Picture 1 (cartoon, rainbow, N blue to C red):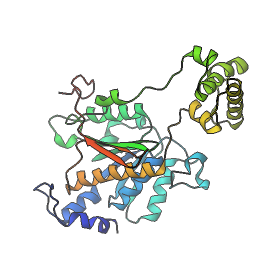
Picture 2: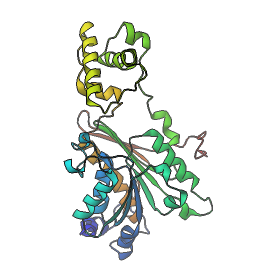
Picture 3: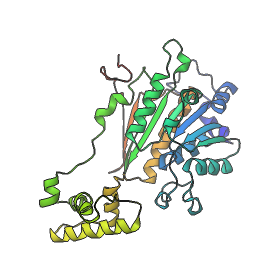
Picture 4: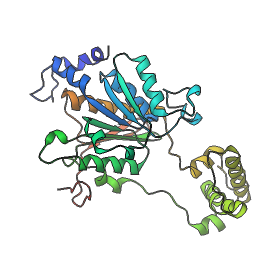
Length: 328
């Protein structure tokens, strides 16, 4: 079924298809079926990627994620249900897709990516990241560069990286040492927002200032060394009410329960439609890379859906001083 769904894309050459590509051959379909793909992350983006890969004909997929399912995941991570709360994201997502799509084998790994050794990563032809962590991306980027043997081209493992934030997202293709790596683009990532203590304590102007005041100053004053637990509803309620009182005192509007959670947990907003678009782009690149049906992305695509729909593709250059790939 899955292979039939992509046959229209493989039946003839496109205007930019490589000369070596032969349309509609069994060799193309075998390459798709037999490729072993690793998906890192089984959250909003990872769920979409798993579904798309399976429907595109890939039959040997592994997924790794250390998280468990929370109630707040259910509005955008569509492979999960209420009965799954508390269970491994990787295990539940794998089973859900395999129950729906025949002939696909998805192997879940409920652990950190750092828990796997070099032998584990060497078995894959492609790695697709649906992560929400810069440090995790840096780690797997470094790992794939170190696995590359300059004298053995088959040791090169491409990485497709997807990321979303609200109505914006990006996908990129990284060929270790051949294209810019993730470390080359660290300058593009904004640092975490911080607020001066004097502003928080004396002259708050934003709702975020009031929340940070309650979090950084008032909580330790009232509870001492007791750490704040953002997953404890009673503690979150205290934080919200304390922030709201502070805001009212300074005539500041906008303190809400969701904003309070967003500030104290550093939550990145996620929208299901953005996840779907970026996951589609990532899986499109996976299909092109494995089958040669069309040229691959070179090498960075950004998407913005804030006001209408905007996409832009450009080549991110390697950084000459990159400490990971060398950049030269």
